[in-house]
Image 1 (cartoon, rainbow, N blue to C red):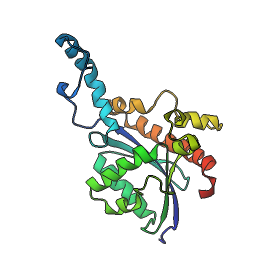
Image 2 (image 1 turned 90 degrees about the vertical axis):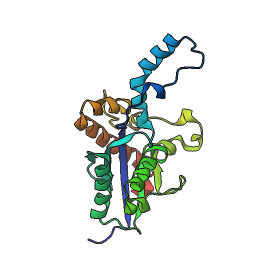
Image 3 (image 1 turned 30 degrees about the horizontal axis):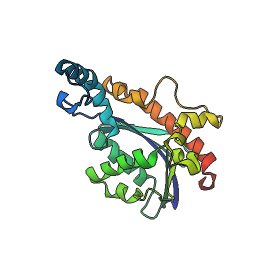
Length: 221
């Protein structure tokens, strides 16, 4: 198979808190709490949410799903053990004749600060040099198409201008994200074994991101 010279790669990852559940000592009470009983009660209350919060840290959490679209095709999701997810994702790119000279546009929502760093860290951790070579490390690379940043336009340094994907999609008249489920629910859904629900949500995110990117960055399509 001949190598592609250009690839629009829409991605979305879902993460959970990882296998190492935090202990009570990992939870800190507010500095103004002085009563030992109140401190203990606060820690007990926050312990479970602290586990879910680890899903925001690429050091502590784990990827439980990667969704992708190749050149706007049908969305596909990869689930399983994190290491196998990364290996499978790297193999997808190899099997689709992506090479070191392929111009890959990485398309995603908040991709520069979340999805790409997570995938890059795993490509190093699990010794996937081919995947590592494809990921731009310059946050201003033209090959990172971040729909959240693009939509904010000149106001992208102000957090108030960073809109959610579903809100942007609906603003443009698209279907929007899946109702009744969002990223904050992924950790608990994963613990309950609801992998298919997570995968469907991830695929929907990819679809909405691709639609939005075609409005914001039509010149690459």
